[in-house]
Image 1 (cartoon, rainbow, N blue to C red):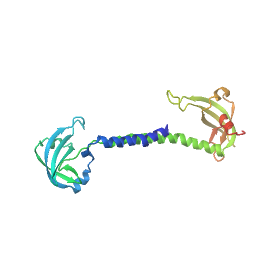
Image 2: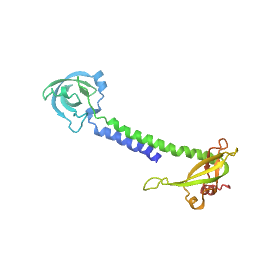
Image 3: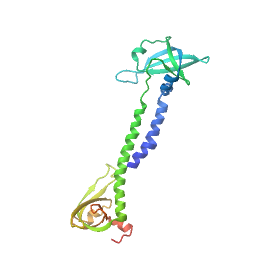
Image 4: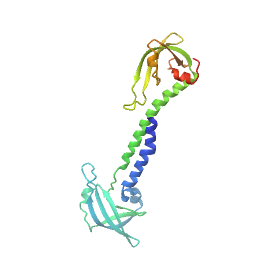
Length: 241
């Protein structure tokens, strides 16, 4: 599940949002407003239309789309500008003259604050998927790594089953279904230590009962760390234990 969430966040959701960002935004919404304000050349323009974008609502108000045209190098250029300066935009009408700044083929109306739909908020979605995937992945990997170290370097001991429970796994699919085996054993000083291991071999429910003996691996350096040796794993790896 962790890998699925990670793959979705990196290779599915993020590219999809980037594509939507490119296709949903109008050309004037992609302008570099900071560069225009800093380096733009002041020009005169004529308003061709002023309309409210009723499909977008910000704090109960609708952005205003201002269309205008201007001349540059002997050519008439048509452009648009969105703003939430609704009161100022209300004073404008088709045929009115306005000041604009033009830079690198892009323009903006002087004295108005530009508005652009915040598509960037959608990037929170892949971040959330990535965080969830990372957490789930680590939850699975860290115990697996600890078990691997015990398999590689642990000392074989005997333990007694304390109890066994079935973990149902995910709804419908039962993915992750396992048996949680709780057991206890004694360290070198005869201290009673409890441990638990999840295994996918459900035959243990029929073959073992509480107080039956099982084999476990115990860390040489920390006797509180242990894991059960699933019989199927021992047989598969030809462990004579």
